[in-house]
Image 1 (spheres, helix red, strand yellow):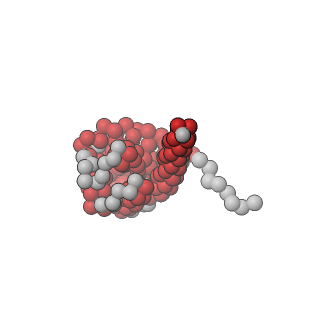
Image 2 (spheres, rainbow, N blue to C red):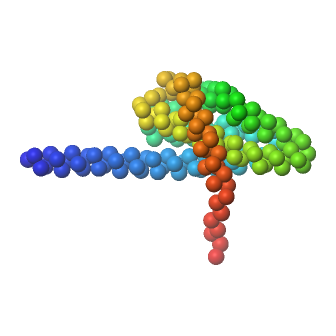
Image 3 (cartoon, rainbow, N blue to C red):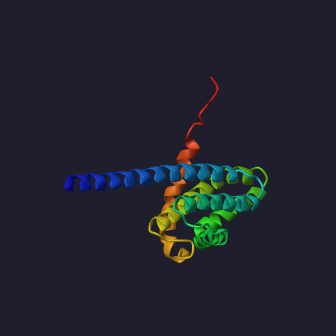
Length: 178
């Protein structure tokens, strides 16, 4: 009887670990798609339009993350958290806005924006992904997420995210043609 209880407990723990690994893989796959989309939006030649589209992509990613953790999605709070994190983190907001606005300068501005904006957009999206996963993983909801408390974690993840985005940018597209 004792062996059956131990086996049943081991099976539940094993299923829980497998479910968590599956969720982590699904979340990273979704995040990677959103990071790549964010990087593509960084190439949009229209100043500030790219920033509006970027927030839309990030909100969609947050919705996906919330669904994985069975947390009711709150678009208003998600948007508020995104803008607070980006706005409160001056190098990200300033860099993103400048990279977007620099596109107004013919040729030089468009080239500079095309180089910088994708990595900044991808890095910010990665950081937001990590912030929300950490928050929901700890049992948090949209109502108890305090952007001020996650600013340093966001900054750390943004730095990592720029590297992730740069590495994704280097990846060769998979060809389906033979």
